[in-house]
Length: 343
Image 1: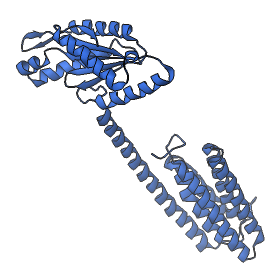
Image 2: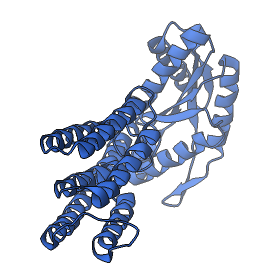
Image 3: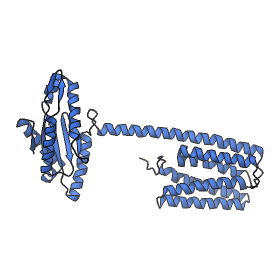
Image 4: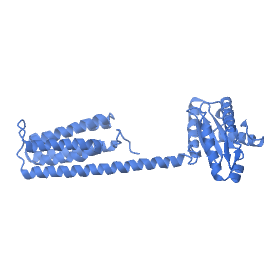
């Protein structure tokens, strides 16, 4: 994904592109002014190019995009008014137009609308208000009309393009979030799914190898779930699974994670618990499940959990950890259900 550097998610790469592009434009205009024999304007453009190079260094070398953006804005706006009020020929008006897409792309349409509107208002005042404190170049009426018209059209186009881009970006982010939820979340219980839990387990195991902090897992299976599904229907079965998912998460600490492992199995990751602490948590969850009251077709459903417990300090890896928990769950099932067994 594109790295961003400010709250409106303006791409950092666009700032670099803007600085480089505007520097090239400044050098080209400096060469043109030199060819025309206008050394003062040529020197001005070269000074602008030098400051743009400084801004590029601030952004690329020192990683200070906000400062680079502020310098770029001050430089472009200051140059805009300098050229508008002090240029010796109409070519400077063309350079003033080049800053429009740069401002919009760098600041986003929300801020750039205010900036561009202010620039336009002051430009009209300078060109038609004939302020006494400033001696403007003798622009022809045709040049002024063309400049203001081009400024307006280009501003509207640039803002419209940025609005469209922002809308597309927001839709993309929403879609990416939705895809991520589908990939990592169980749609029935809204808990993390097996894929997400496997990723968490692997990450936690890597941490364990570095700092030797033990962790444990619980593998809980809803007893007699097939009977509930067959007798009362899948809708009731789904309601029971959803209720168990909520119940498992309620008494846990913030760092603990509950996931739907598959079917009627749930896994609980206890990131800082040893085997003894994990058994205590498992017993509490099993007791809570036994207190769950649900009814279907006038019958009171008896809900119970069988739980297998495994701790990483007694296993050789993630596969062994899961296999140990499965073994504990298998023993709990065959010893009469509704119990906790350490694998």
